[in-house]
Image (cartoon, rainbow, N blue to C red):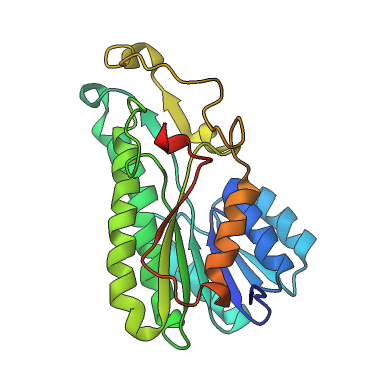
Amino acid sequence: MKTSLKGKTALITGGGSGIGRAAVIKMAEAGANIILLDRSPEDSDELVKKIGNEQAIHVTADVSKPEQMEKAIQEGVDKFGGIDIVFANAGQNGTFTPIEHLEPEDWNSVMMTNLTGTFLTLKYTIPHLKKQGGSIIITSSINGTRTFKNFGFSAYATTKAGQVGFGKMAAVELAQFKIRVNIVCPGAIDTNIDASTNMEEEKLEEIRIPVEYPEGNQPLAGGSGKPEQVADLVHYLASDAASHVTGSVVYVDGVESLL
């Protein structure tokens, strides 16, 4: 399979940790130049140094801010001359609470990061991708797409469903320019995204319906997946081996969402 990314440039949002970091490492190992977009430079700068400044650059931006995104993406293009792969991965969990307790500002925060952030990532990279074609991969989730049992996830799940709809619309719109768009839907993955979570446990008890599961929420692995397992799929979708794959939604959850 043609999975080498040598000579290509990949933009990865939220690339400083978790799934994004694993994808940065995987694509760099496959030969791609890396534009690592993240809003906190500490971990990102260390990763860029590890890969090498000639192959990677860290650009700082909040994905929900149009001016920051346009500037950061252009900075990466200026260094490497273009973009071939886009991994729209940045996101946050936000506040998990019943709808009646969810504050409008908490709803808007999740919408802006997860949904508007995905839109802005595509908006400002499409002009570069149209020059030669390429691949876009969007990180959605099993929540809001195949499972709805996580009580209090209403804002998060809404953004994840929205990303699937947006990704499919983009796949149709961009096919004529030889740009592929696919969506990956991870289940529970060992990352630090929980740091962006406000779990209002006491309020969630108002709406929880007791559900009993077998031991281990992912039968295939007996527990949460690893960021590297998602990165393996992202690498495939970014490569020429997936040259006829677009508009697809792929689940990476060890069958968790089918329970």
